[in-house]
Length: 215
Image 1: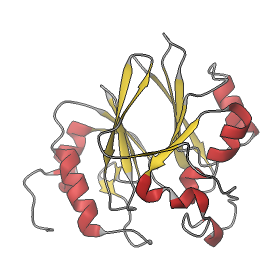
Image 2: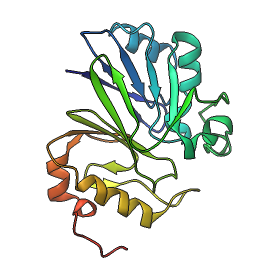
Image 3: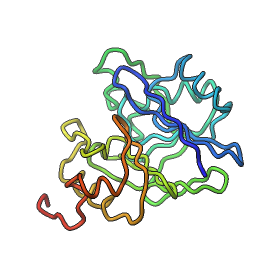
């Protein structure tokens, strides 16, 4: 079973996650909004010296600015959906140049992701689901028990769509697709409190599988 640890990073209080397989020792970092001494300490206290992956749910500055410094210091492959890869290379595209308090070192991903891709930490499978709407390249990462939803899905809410690359129609469609996932999952969003899939199906109207009123 994967272990999950949360760290709140940066001025925008982004939820960054460490997922760790205690059997193989392999780990991944999801959405390192910043990488500083405190974040490095957070990882090393949990036994991480070299993460296998640095996984990005989308390309906004508050989720990616720590990716390159983390790779340079500790290693790990930076992975992002192909539609948002430009955000790693261009601080205008990530909106880092539009805000104070964040500094982005422009970089390129080690590989790009697409819908249905699978990754492994030990024997634990991580599946990529493309969920455009918040950005063109937004994804969620799914394990057998967990969904890391980035800024696509929040507890009883959804991500904003008024930034470049956003689409309300696309996000409604993505959320309804998430609502059709069967089984129970613990949801780890990009901001705010954790949730569960069954709770969201009951309380988040955008996850109602038969809701087509926004098409």
